[in-house]
Image 1 (cartoon, protein in one colour):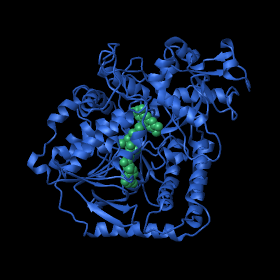
Image 2: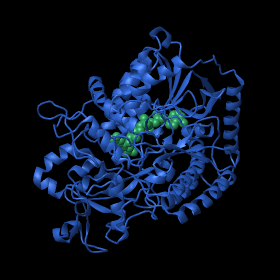
Image 3: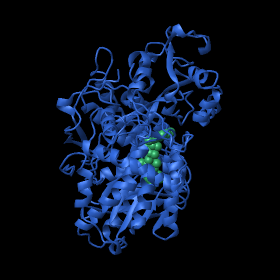
Image 4: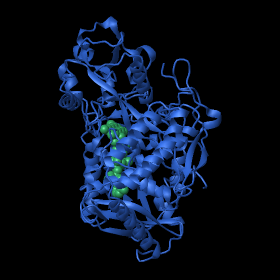
Amino acid sequence: MKLDSKVPGGPVSEKWTNHKFEMKLVNPANKRKFKIIVVGTGLAGGAAAASLAELGYDVHNFCFQDSPRRAHSIAAQGGINAAKNYQGDGDSIYRLFYDTVKGGDFRSREANVHRLAEVSVDIIDQCVAQGVPFAREYGGQLANRSFGGAQVSRTFYARGQTGQQLLLGAYSALSRQVGLGKVKMHTRSEMLDLVLVKGVARGIVTRCLKTGNISSHSADAVILATGGYGNVFYLSTNAMGSNVTAAYRAYKKGAGFANPCYTQIHPTCIPVSGDHQSKLTLMSESLRNDGRVWVPKSQNEKRKPVDIPEEERDYYLERKYPSFGNLVPRDIASRSAKEACDHGNGVGDSGLGVYLDFGHAIKRDGKNTISQKYGNLFQMYEKITGEDPYTTPMRIFPAVHYTMGGLWVDYNLMSTIPGLHVLGEANFSDHGANRLGASALMQGLADGYFVIPYTIGNFFASTALEPVSTDQQEFKDAVSLVTERVKTLMNINGKRSADSFHKELGHIMWDKCGMARNREGLEAAIQKIPEIKQEFWENLRIPGSGDRLNPELEKAGRVADFLEFGELMCRDALQREESCGGHFREEHQTAEGEATRNDEDFAHAAVWEFKGETAVPERHKEELSFENVKLVTRSYK
Ligand SMILES: Cc1cc2nc3c(=O)[nH]c(=O)nc-3n(C[C@H](O)[C@H](O)[C@H](O)COP(=O)(O)OP(=O)(O)OC[C@H]3O[C@@H](n4cnc5c(N)ncnc54)[C@H](O)[C@@H]3O)c2cc1C
């Protein structure tokens, strides 16, 4: 596998500008001759499909939901970063670039991150023009708040519903193109394989989730914007449908998978309440602007939080990290919460919780102000827990939230398979080993609105593509394989549900490949997961049939891929002998429990190549060079 990042030469601040000029263009009249498949209608896919159609390409857009508007992006709460410096508090494109590289613990590609910071300012203008109702100051200026890992306020937001409002913006742009006949929407269609013709991505195979019909679609290029794989852990804050299938099938067809072990554990989620749960709920990071995190100083404390006096509380983030306080990055806040709970200072019945307290903020700013900022989040918390966060501190605990790993892409967002482009959370590119809050929306929209519209033109203009049709053998073979796999799943007729296997896998992943990892645990997981996989293929039970709506069949297909992918994550975590960002290897830490990076041996992206069903995948490296940001030990003290 050849990993050519295709990063342009020149100073980092001029790379993208020069590249845009140097890339070849497709003349407007010729654009309509190119057909592009976009899988995904979240912020990355929706933005790409709308923009490419606006440029004149013939776009076919797929999602498994009943409407593009239901993509997981709609759940995003807290905000989107941009280096507008409206606050005049010292922000700049360079500072956003620097914060993002540092926040990712120096495991991302500098050139991509700088481009992200550059286009961040355009995203806000584009979204405002679409009518996205960002919060405003009294004078009409767009408002900002702070997020973790930054000492400036650069997060634009629409209360706690930023993702929803941004997606409505992208959806209206998309709907316009659907109305004009430039985008053909395929809802309730799940991509189950990628089709290659002469080594180039030329189509996909889908299953219609309403009729069970399996069909193929051809194109001149394929874009995957299929989101993250956090649900491999079973419990996560992701939408229940989020899965790895599209990316994993592309991996099996030859696309390199980068850094699969990089998972983000978000520090502020509602704690698990029992074994019955199938989903966890995020409490946005924006709450750490005003909420203060603490645990009782004494262990096994049974008093109510309001009865614990100030001097008996440990505001541990403010104590350990005085310059960033409650706004340290997520990986650090999560590990500190775990550490407090491991020491017996956790709260709630399980002891797996810490307080997020708004008492001081309410006293300082008044209930009304706090309610205007976070009202919908407080209401959500109260509905789920039955406790009123205006009068008693929230109880929170870390949970799986986002995945920084993904299909490897070059600077043009193309994977190792020519013609296959990957956008948004599905690719690996910009966040290194830890994503800063409010940067996922920024990246998805940057990829969709501002990067792929340029780079895909360059691909078409510089590649000789032969005509293809779904009558070709490659498409027929791919359809037969998918049909066979569905039949096999339906015919197992065993005793266990897909969910029960998923839960079993999730427990192992959380225990052995979660917030803290070690060699012994990872080796045990690599041993155990194939055993679960074997039982899955012998003892799975799917009620109903494959030729109609069957959510159990959908789930089973996704769990089958998670079972293989989970093993790949553990292999990646085992090989990375260092702690960096969200990847914390217990063997590599300081006496104070801080992560110890190993730049000499691991300043690279690890890219995995599929070598066959029974073979161990091969690990390749993309060395990362840091010419603008100095590699230092990350400190938020
Ligand atoms: C609760 C929550 C809150 C968040 N808040 C923020 C925030 O405030 N700020 C921020 O920056 N980030 C936030 N994030 C992260 C952010 O929401 C996501 O990273 C981002 O929305 C991902 O967008 P995407 O377009 O890449 O993928 P998604 O929105 O996940 O969309 C994936 C699309 O792919 C389609 N798809 C997937 N697989 C297939 C398949 N096999 N066949 C057909 N279609 C398929 C789906 O139907 C969907 O349309 C939050 C995440 C969560 C879970």
